[in-house]
Image 1 (cartoon, rainbow, N blue to C red):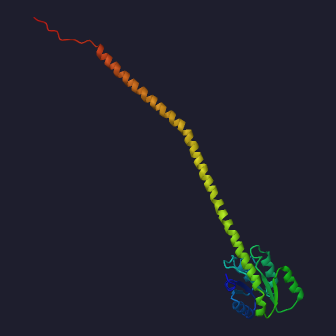
Image 2 (cartoon, rainbow, N blue to C red; image 1 turned 135 degrees about the vertical axis):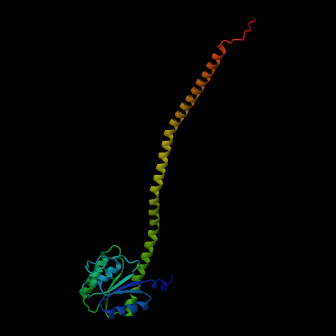
Image 3 (cartoon, rainbow, N blue to C red; image 1 turned 180 degrees about the vertical axis):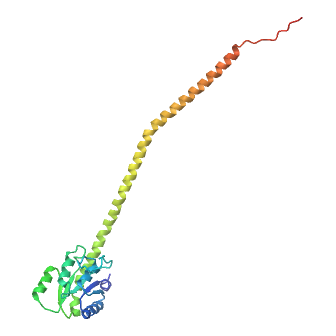
Length: 233
């Protein structure tokens, strides 16, 4: 896959309460062949990612199916600052590896140091220029490759999990088959005994019938025969 093909798949989440700055950063990122999603607050950024924001007015969170390769956010925003958003993302096990870049119109060294120590990849001073955004490509590339490697690792794990789910069914089938064989082995002697008893009963019945017939024949044979005697007068 060429570099241009990879770059066209980068997805950046841009967060800024200023509509002018949002449009500017969106235009610059699109020139770099990036897909851009813009939101106007840290709460909406967390909502988009599916991270709990503790905002009572926020809608129910649900993780987005689209992959996010980088988050670029303004520092000074009402409600939730860019620093607070950075901390939330880094505390999330699902999104902690997404690079986060902070922007600010104020050059305050302690603020910059605090963001970098918390895990920010870069800290840009506004107005952001194309030269600044060119620094983001290595960060996005690293995230993209890590996600691809993770998918390759998860594939055999998913296959193994599916196989493990089938094994209990096979074991259950084998257990049922074993029980059936056991019942058959227990029933076979009883069936043989029953067949023998039936055969003996049938033989005895036949013998009784034969005996009765013989007794009947013997009675007929022992009965005296009277021959007609003619007396002449």
